[in-house]
Each structure stands twice: as C-alpha cells, then as structure tokens.
Length: 119
Image 1 (cartoon, helix red, strand yellow):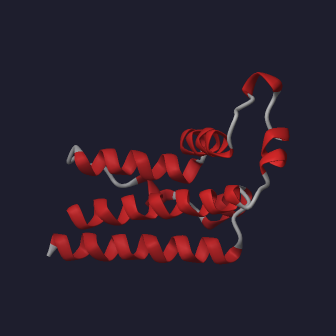
Image 2 (cartoon, one colour):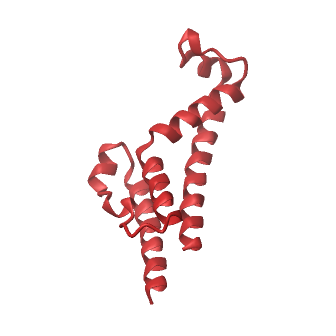
C-alpha cells in the first residue's frame, strides 16, 4: 500500500511543480495584475504561494488524489475515486490529449500495484 501512497504523492508533487514552473515564467508585474488590490503581495514568492494554495484547494484532480490518499491511509474498503474519472470529464476540464493519456498511464500503474497486492 505504501507504494501506491508514494505514487500518488509523487503525482501530486509533479502537478504542483509543473504549476510552479509556469508561475515562475510570469513576470512579477504581470502576476501582480492578476490579483485584486486587497490581495497585493510584496514578492513573487508570495504570489506563487497564494496560487499554489488555491490550486490545491480547487483543482479537481488534485482534490481527488488527496481524497484517495485519505482512503488508503485509513485503510478504507472503498474504491479509489481516480478510477471513476472519465476521459471526457478531463477533456471538459481543459486537459490535452497528451495529459489525459499520461494520467491514464498513472492510473494503470496504480491498478497494477493493486493487482500485485491482491495476489
């Protein structure tokens, strides 16, 4: 089970790192313009932290993976939520064909690990 937990945590970390990389490519003045006046920060790092925190709270894939981690850690006898995600729903959320394919490879790895565990 620890292998699956590690795999999911690594996936979440990669998702976060990809967003961090995109944020770092945005000039500070442009980041500043994305926020309202009540949310003005003094550094790019503070903006990045705000965006990443918001991402973790609102990105539906990240949220599903977080719920699945909870299921695994608590040894709940429930099917993981990530198995119920359809390609059509990912497409509707703006994921590219390559991103969807990559996510399904990730799901296949988890299924393989679960099969090995059952045996």
